[in-house]
Length: 293
View (spheres, rainbow, N blue to C red):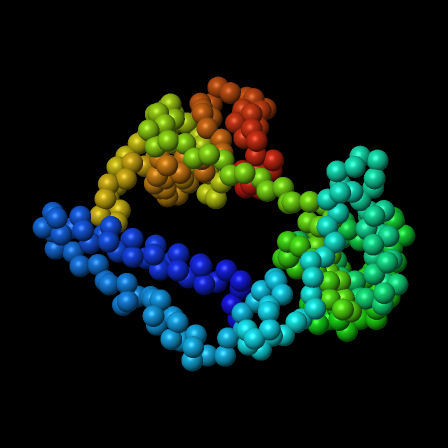
């Protein structure tokens, strides 16, 4: 079963494979080095073989558009894109959940089963409370699409399904969480720092400082060292733990140390050291239980 743009995607991937192969072969030959990249046909199904295999198989090609007669056997599954509540979200005076309740009532009047797909268990519980507040009843949890289709039509099925948008068939309607609330807000990853900054940050530590590793807890910074790993030298922070254990942390992973610059001198009072640890943790919402202790 092939999606509408599967052919274009296959052609683009084959061209990309050839580009990678040529990039590895030509500079090596020019430099006279002994290196033999495997030809693409040894690793991949290229266009000719891919087409031959499709010709020998029973293939269904999906299309969002109507297909003219004479193009082979066509099966209309009677599915169309579902309702999106973007217009209601854009209007400040309109409550999107009131619009959802009216839409669900209209679907049920047409004797359609209604399924609302959420991204997670927590989202399903929150949606259940909101829907109940808007007088939607007969809310049931389901684990799969077949389970939802087996429920009585007056019920509203709440499922955890990774679907970005809903759809409607002749006897069912699925409404996605994004259809109701809009695109998911994904927290962006922190931009990685440049390699030259790692050493500068590591050298700001003094030998004997206490540090807290997110997995290994509190240890003592013993200095910078270079170790050989995978045939290459790596600059590492050497951390010492109780019992003589040592940890060599690559400087590029220094962000794993959630607390820095905790001096190990005995002159500090315990409350001051706790406050210093809290300040150092900064944006970390919840320290590791071992670090808390």
